[in-house]
Length: 305
Ligand code: ADP
Ligand code: MG
Image (tube, rainbow, N blue to C red; front, side, top):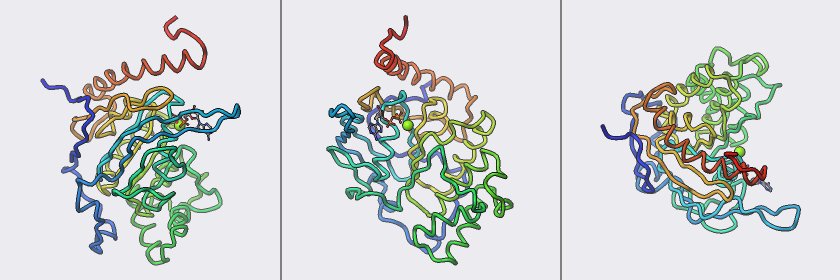
Protein backbone atom coordinates (compact mmCIF):
# COMPACT_ATOMS: atom_id res chain seq x y z
CA UNK A 1 0.00 0.00 0.00
CA UNK A 2 1.36 3.45 -0.85
CA UNK A 3 1.77 5.94 1.99
CA UNK A 4 -0.72 8.81 2.00
CA UNK A 5 2.08 11.04 3.19
CA UNK A 6 4.59 12.50 0.80
CA UNK A 7 7.42 14.62 2.06
CA UNK A 8 8.13 17.07 -0.68
CA UNK A 9 9.17 20.56 -1.61
CA UNK A 10 6.92 20.73 -4.65
CA UNK A 11 3.46 22.19 -4.34
CA UNK A 12 0.76 20.90 -6.66
CA UNK A 13 -2.86 21.90 -6.08
CA UNK A 14 -5.18 18.97 -5.47
CA UNK A 15 -8.94 19.01 -5.31
CA UNK A 16 -10.42 16.55 -2.81
CA UNK A 17 -13.70 18.36 -2.74
CA UNK A 18 -15.85 16.91 -5.47
CA UNK A 19 -18.26 15.47 -2.88
CA UNK A 20 -19.08 18.93 -1.50
CA UNK A 21 -21.87 21.17 -2.74
CA UNK A 22 -20.38 24.54 -3.68
CA UNK A 23 -21.53 27.60 -1.78
CA UNK A 24 -22.15 30.27 -4.43
CA UNK A 25 -21.12 33.67 -3.11
CA UNK A 26 -22.80 36.77 -4.50
CA UNK A 27 -19.50 37.79 -6.06
CA UNK A 28 -19.57 34.61 -8.15
CA UNK A 29 -23.30 34.93 -8.88
CA UNK A 30 -22.43 38.25 -10.46
CA UNK A 31 -19.83 36.49 -12.53
CA UNK A 32 -16.91 38.35 -10.95
CA UNK A 33 -14.11 35.82 -10.89
CA UNK A 34 -10.67 37.07 -9.95
CA UNK A 35 -7.73 36.58 -12.29
CA UNK A 36 -6.16 34.16 -9.84
CA UNK A 37 -9.28 31.95 -9.80
CA UNK A 38 -9.10 31.71 -13.60
CA UNK A 39 -5.41 30.91 -13.63
CA UNK A 40 -4.62 28.37 -10.91
CA UNK A 41 -0.97 28.23 -11.94
CA UNK A 42 -0.50 31.67 -10.38
CA UNK A 43 -0.02 31.02 -6.67
CA UNK A 44 -2.43 32.85 -4.41
CA UNK A 45 0.46 33.54 -2.03
CA UNK A 46 4.17 33.30 -2.60
CA UNK A 47 6.93 33.97 -0.10
CA UNK A 48 10.34 34.24 -1.68
CA UNK A 49 13.44 34.13 0.53
CA UNK A 50 11.60 35.96 3.26
CA UNK A 51 13.51 36.95 6.40
CA UNK A 52 12.10 38.90 9.32
CA UNK A 53 13.94 40.07 12.40
CA UNK A 54 12.67 41.94 15.45
CA UNK A 55 14.55 44.59 17.43
CA UNK A 56 15.17 43.34 20.99
CA UNK A 57 15.61 45.28 24.25
CA UNK A 58 19.35 44.55 24.20
CA UNK A 59 19.73 46.52 20.94
CA UNK A 60 20.38 43.35 18.97
CA UNK A 61 17.99 41.71 16.53
CA UNK A 62 16.15 38.43 16.87
CA UNK A 63 15.80 36.57 13.59
CA UNK A 64 12.26 35.17 13.71
CA UNK A 65 11.98 33.91 10.11
CA UNK A 66 14.83 32.99 7.79
CA UNK A 67 14.75 32.29 4.06
CA UNK A 68 11.13 31.22 3.92
CA UNK A 69 10.09 29.97 0.50
CA UNK A 70 6.47 28.96 0.29
CA UNK A 71 3.74 28.93 -2.32
CA UNK A 72 0.04 28.50 -1.57
CA UNK A 73 -2.29 27.74 -4.47
CA UNK A 74 -5.78 29.26 -4.81
CA UNK A 75 -8.25 27.18 -2.79
CA UNK A 76 -5.53 25.25 -1.01
CA UNK A 77 -5.68 24.44 2.72
CA UNK A 78 -2.19 24.71 4.14
CA UNK A 79 -1.34 24.05 7.78
CA UNK A 80 1.77 25.40 9.49
CA UNK A 81 3.19 23.56 12.50
CA UNK A 82 6.29 24.18 14.57
CA UNK A 83 7.45 24.56 18.16
CA UNK A 84 6.34 27.51 20.24
CA UNK A 85 8.31 30.63 19.33
CA UNK A 86 9.35 29.41 15.87
CA UNK A 87 7.62 32.28 14.07
CA UNK A 88 4.21 30.82 13.10
CA UNK A 89 2.24 33.91 14.18
CA UNK A 90 4.91 36.15 12.66
CA UNK A 91 4.44 34.35 9.34
CA UNK A 92 0.67 34.91 9.39
CA UNK A 93 1.09 38.58 10.37
CA UNK A 94 3.49 38.97 7.47
CA UNK A 95 1.01 37.49 5.00
CA UNK A 96 -1.77 39.64 6.52
CA UNK A 97 0.42 42.71 5.88
CA UNK A 98 0.60 43.56 9.61
CA UNK A 99 4.40 43.06 9.63
CA UNK A 100 6.87 43.78 6.89
CA UNK A 101 9.69 41.45 5.95
CA UNK A 102 13.31 42.50 6.54
CA UNK A 103 14.20 41.03 3.15
CA UNK A 104 12.62 38.90 0.42
CA UNK A 105 9.22 39.18 -1.24
CA UNK A 106 5.64 38.48 -0.20
CA UNK A 107 3.43 38.19 -3.27
CA UNK A 108 -0.35 37.99 -3.43
CA UNK A 109 -1.61 36.99 -6.90
CA UNK A 110 1.93 37.62 -8.15
CA UNK A 111 1.86 41.23 -6.87
CA UNK A 112 3.93 42.47 -3.91
CA UNK A 113 1.71 42.76 -0.82
CA UNK A 114 1.30 46.39 0.23
CA UNK A 115 0.24 46.30 3.88
CA UNK A 116 -3.08 44.88 5.06
CA UNK A 117 -5.68 44.15 2.41
CA UNK A 118 -9.32 43.17 2.61
CA UNK A 119 -8.45 40.18 0.42
CA UNK A 120 -6.64 38.58 3.42
CA UNK A 121 -8.18 38.27 6.85
CA UNK A 122 -6.65 37.07 10.12
CA UNK A 123 -8.66 35.11 12.69
CA UNK A 124 -6.92 34.58 16.02
CA UNK A 125 -7.76 32.71 19.19
CA UNK A 126 -9.07 35.73 21.10
CA UNK A 127 -11.58 36.37 18.26
CA UNK A 128 -12.13 40.09 19.01
CA UNK A 129 -15.94 39.84 19.02
CA UNK A 130 -17.81 42.80 20.55
CA UNK A 131 -19.95 41.87 23.60
CA UNK A 132 -22.25 44.89 23.14
CA UNK A 133 -23.24 43.83 19.62
CA UNK A 134 -25.52 40.97 18.61
CA UNK A 135 -24.29 38.07 16.51
CA UNK A 136 -25.67 39.68 13.35
CA UNK A 137 -24.17 43.07 14.21
CA UNK A 138 -20.79 41.46 14.87
CA UNK A 139 -20.89 39.80 11.45
CA UNK A 140 -21.96 43.08 9.87
CA UNK A 141 -19.17 45.01 11.57
CA UNK A 142 -16.35 43.67 9.39
CA UNK A 143 -18.32 44.55 6.26
CA UNK A 144 -18.94 48.12 7.54
CA UNK A 145 -15.18 48.50 7.96
CA UNK A 146 -14.78 47.37 4.36
CA UNK A 147 -17.35 49.95 3.19
CA UNK A 148 -19.86 47.41 1.87
CA UNK A 149 -23.32 48.96 1.23
CA UNK A 150 -26.18 48.13 3.61
CA UNK A 151 -28.30 45.90 1.30
CA UNK A 152 -25.25 43.78 0.51
CA UNK A 153 -24.30 43.66 4.21
CA UNK A 154 -27.77 42.42 5.15
CA UNK A 155 -27.69 39.77 2.43
CA UNK A 156 -24.24 38.58 3.52
CA UNK A 157 -25.21 38.45 7.22
CA UNK A 158 -28.09 36.20 6.24
CA UNK A 159 -26.03 33.97 3.92
CA UNK A 160 -22.97 33.55 6.13
CA UNK A 161 -24.90 32.98 9.37
CA UNK A 162 -26.73 30.24 7.53
CA UNK A 163 -23.44 28.83 6.31
CA UNK A 164 -22.16 28.46 9.90
CA UNK A 165 -25.58 27.27 11.13
CA UNK A 166 -26.12 30.22 13.45
CA UNK A 167 -29.00 31.97 11.77
CA UNK A 168 -31.40 31.35 14.62
CA UNK A 169 -28.94 33.02 17.03
CA UNK A 170 -28.60 36.22 15.01
CA UNK A 171 -30.12 38.38 17.80
CA UNK A 172 -28.14 36.76 20.65
CA UNK A 173 -25.26 38.46 22.41
CA UNK A 174 -21.81 36.90 22.53
CA UNK A 175 -21.97 35.96 26.26
CA UNK A 176 -25.07 33.86 25.47
CA UNK A 177 -23.07 31.59 23.13
CA UNK A 178 -20.79 28.59 23.72
CA UNK A 179 -17.10 28.72 22.79
CA UNK A 180 -17.69 26.82 19.57
CA UNK A 181 -20.53 29.13 18.55
CA UNK A 182 -18.30 32.16 19.15
CA UNK A 183 -15.71 30.66 16.84
CA UNK A 184 -18.40 30.25 14.19
CA UNK A 185 -19.45 33.90 14.60
CA UNK A 186 -15.82 34.95 14.08
CA UNK A 187 -15.65 32.70 11.02
CA UNK A 188 -18.89 34.14 9.60
CA UNK A 189 -17.67 37.69 10.25
CA UNK A 190 -14.44 36.97 8.39
CA UNK A 191 -16.12 35.14 5.51
CA UNK A 192 -18.82 37.80 5.09
CA UNK A 193 -16.20 40.27 3.89
CA UNK A 194 -15.50 37.72 1.12
CA UNK A 195 -11.73 37.60 1.51
CA UNK A 196 -9.74 35.36 -0.81
CA UNK A 197 -7.46 34.19 1.99
CA UNK A 198 -8.30 33.18 5.56
CA UNK A 199 -5.34 33.26 7.94
CA UNK A 200 -6.12 31.32 11.14
CA UNK A 201 -3.80 31.46 14.16
CA UNK A 202 -4.43 28.50 16.49
CA UNK A 203 -8.16 29.29 16.43
CA UNK A 204 -9.32 26.11 18.19
CA UNK A 205 -6.52 25.73 20.74
CA UNK A 206 -8.66 26.69 23.75
CA UNK A 207 -11.69 24.54 22.90
CA UNK A 208 -12.68 21.21 24.39
CA UNK A 209 -12.12 18.12 22.26
CA UNK A 210 -15.75 17.60 21.18
CA UNK A 211 -16.25 21.22 20.16
CA UNK A 212 -12.95 21.17 18.27
CA UNK A 213 -14.02 18.02 16.38
CA UNK A 214 -17.27 19.71 15.33
CA UNK A 215 -15.44 22.83 14.23
CA UNK A 216 -13.02 20.77 12.15
CA UNK A 217 -16.03 19.30 10.32
CA UNK A 218 -17.60 22.75 9.91
CA UNK A 219 -14.40 24.38 8.69
CA UNK A 220 -13.68 21.61 6.20
CA UNK A 221 -17.21 21.88 4.81
CA UNK A 222 -17.13 25.68 4.65
CA UNK A 223 -13.72 25.65 2.98
CA UNK A 224 -14.98 23.19 0.39
CA UNK A 225 -18.15 25.18 -0.25
CA UNK A 226 -16.58 28.64 -0.39
CA UNK A 227 -13.31 27.63 -2.05
CA UNK A 228 -11.28 30.08 0.01
CA UNK A 229 -7.53 29.71 0.44
CA UNK A 230 -6.69 28.89 4.07
CA UNK A 231 -3.40 29.14 5.94
CA UNK A 232 -3.97 27.56 9.35
CA UNK A 233 -1.42 27.67 12.16
CA UNK A 234 -1.53 25.06 14.89
CA UNK A 235 0.87 23.37 17.28
CA UNK A 236 -1.32 20.25 17.05
CA UNK A 237 0.03 17.97 14.33
CA UNK A 238 -3.01 15.72 14.28
CA UNK A 239 -5.24 18.75 13.68
CA UNK A 240 -2.94 19.80 10.82
CA UNK A 241 -3.20 16.37 9.16
CA UNK A 242 -6.97 16.31 9.75
CA UNK A 243 -7.41 19.62 7.90
CA UNK A 244 -4.56 20.31 5.51
CA UNK A 245 -3.79 19.55 1.88
CA UNK A 246 -0.24 20.19 2.97
CA UNK A 247 1.51 20.52 6.31
CA UNK A 248 4.53 22.81 6.54
CA UNK A 249 6.89 22.10 9.41
CA UNK A 250 8.97 25.02 10.66
CA UNK A 251 12.25 24.69 12.55
CA UNK A 252 12.84 26.21 15.97
CA UNK A 253 14.17 29.81 15.86
CA UNK A 254 14.89 31.10 13.35
CA UNK A 255 11.82 29.67 11.65
CA UNK A 256 12.72 27.97 8.39
CA UNK A 257 10.77 25.44 6.36
CA UNK A 258 12.15 22.10 7.57
CA UNK A 259 9.91 19.82 5.54
CA UNK A 260 6.57 19.95 3.86
CA UNK A 261 4.19 17.03 3.77
CA UNK A 262 1.46 16.50 1.21
CA UNK A 263 -1.56 14.82 2.83
CA UNK A 264 -3.17 12.61 0.22
CA UNK A 265 -5.97 11.29 2.44
CA UNK A 266 -9.59 11.33 1.29
CA UNK A 267 -12.01 13.86 2.78
CA UNK A 268 -13.93 14.25 4.95
CA UNK A 269 -11.35 13.12 7.49
CA UNK A 270 -11.62 12.51 11.22
CA UNK A 271 -9.08 12.92 13.98
CA UNK A 272 -9.47 9.25 14.96
CA UNK A 273 -8.80 7.92 11.44
CA UNK A 274 -5.96 5.41 11.57
CA UNK A 275 -4.29 7.01 8.57
CA UNK A 276 -4.59 10.50 10.07
CA UNK A 277 -2.97 9.19 13.26
CA UNK A 278 -0.23 7.40 11.29
CA UNK A 279 0.67 10.46 9.22
CA UNK A 280 0.59 12.68 12.31
CA UNK A 281 2.98 10.34 14.11
CA UNK A 282 5.55 10.66 11.33
CA UNK A 283 5.36 14.46 11.33
CA UNK A 284 5.39 14.57 15.13
CA UNK A 285 8.72 12.69 15.22
CA UNK A 286 10.12 15.37 12.94
CA UNK A 287 8.61 18.15 15.06
CA UNK A 288 9.92 16.61 18.28
CA UNK A 289 13.51 17.27 17.21
CA UNK A 290 12.65 20.96 16.96
CA UNK A 291 10.78 20.99 20.26
CA UNK A 292 13.84 19.43 21.93
CA UNK A 293 16.01 22.22 20.51
CA UNK A 294 13.60 24.80 21.88
CA UNK A 295 13.65 23.19 25.34
CA UNK A 296 17.45 23.09 25.32
CA UNK A 297 17.68 26.74 24.35
CA UNK A 298 14.92 28.14 26.52
CA UNK A 299 15.56 26.10 29.67
CA UNK A 300 19.27 25.35 29.15
CA UNK A 301 18.45 21.64 29.63
CA UNK A 302 19.18 18.42 27.86
CA UNK A 303 15.69 17.63 26.52
CA UNK A 304 16.07 13.88 26.98
CA UNK A 305 17.84 14.04 30.33
P1 ADP B 1 4.97 31.32 17.41
O1 ADP B 1 3.68 31.89 16.93
O2 ADP B 1 5.50 30.22 16.54
O3 ADP B 1 4.92 30.86 18.85
P2 ADP B 1 5.93 34.05 17.14
O4 ADP B 1 5.80 34.36 15.71
O5 ADP B 1 4.92 34.62 18.06
O6 ADP B 1 6.08 32.47 17.35
O7 ADP B 1 7.36 34.56 17.64
C1 ADP B 1 8.58 34.19 17.01
C2 ADP B 1 9.73 34.80 17.79
O8 ADP B 1 9.71 36.21 17.64
C3 ADP B 1 9.66 34.53 19.30
O9 ADP B 1 10.96 34.34 19.78
C4 ADP B 1 9.05 35.80 19.86
O10 ADP B 1 9.51 36.02 21.17
C5 ADP B 1 9.58 36.86 18.91
N1 ADP B 1 8.65 37.97 18.72
C6 ADP B 1 7.36 37.89 18.31
N2 ADP B 1 6.81 39.10 18.21
C7 ADP B 1 7.77 40.00 18.57
C8 ADP B 1 7.83 41.42 18.67
N3 ADP B 1 6.77 42.17 18.36
N4 ADP B 1 8.99 41.98 19.07
C9 ADP B 1 10.07 41.23 19.38
N5 ADP B 1 10.09 39.87 19.29
C10 ADP B 1 8.96 39.26 18.90
MG1 MG C 1 1.79 32.08 17.86
